Image (cartoon, rainbow, N blue to C red; front, side, top):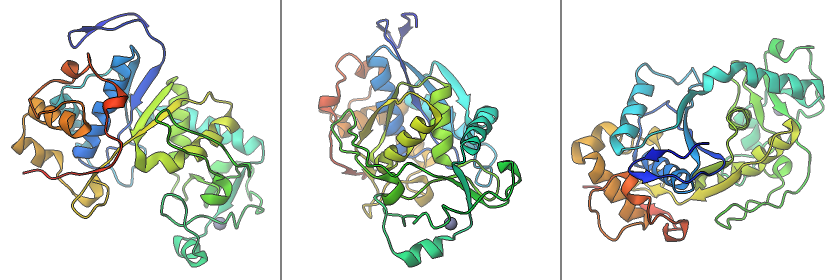
Length: 312
Ligand SMILES: [Zn+2]
């Protein structure tokens, strides 16, 4: 990577690459923008590239115009990217990963419903219901996974992984038992999140993943998938979350403060200043650009505990 001028600060020649990978099945919300800002600051302050990857694979939830909305929101905040990629552009790599897993006999079909998982009553670390690997010994009925009408799971090695992220967060887990073998391709043909994210990070040579703590419990599963596929493991860091009024994660699915509403209340620099104060990077809400936060950015300043987001 060459040294480049960006946001008024000369970037040192560094190594590696970060990424921000929002799902575009909903509007950007304050939590999306916080995650994007922290990811961008982490990469830019370390001289790393940072790419934007638009997660558009779940066609069942996509609506027209959503990616334009996400690009507009990120641009409004003042963020720029070394490259923009589309998850759907990596279809051949996703399929090759499934081919590789099938060739080693690691895929198995499953049509257990959420109701069946709930009946077993075992909670996973992420709060969902763990899958008890009920179908693990069912053989593939077809020689090609593409012809299987059921969901497909991958058999993970049943080992306890000792893992810590860059912030010291303990990610240790026995994913096969605590979460259950993950679905890697859904019955409707959509290649599933855990596999896609691991393939995409490897394809883009992502070395540093910065993301919200709500995703921390899935890291061990993704780490094992990386091992199965022979990929390098990125360094992970999980940050605090902005919570909605009922202490739930500020998710787009809850409709909390979408970008369309945020922009009627704030300017981009105004909101950047607000996020900087909430994150602990600045003492006041003074409007600023992301570039102006670079010179004294450090993770030791960023708050660790989640925060109730109240605006207006
Ligand atoms: Zn099953």
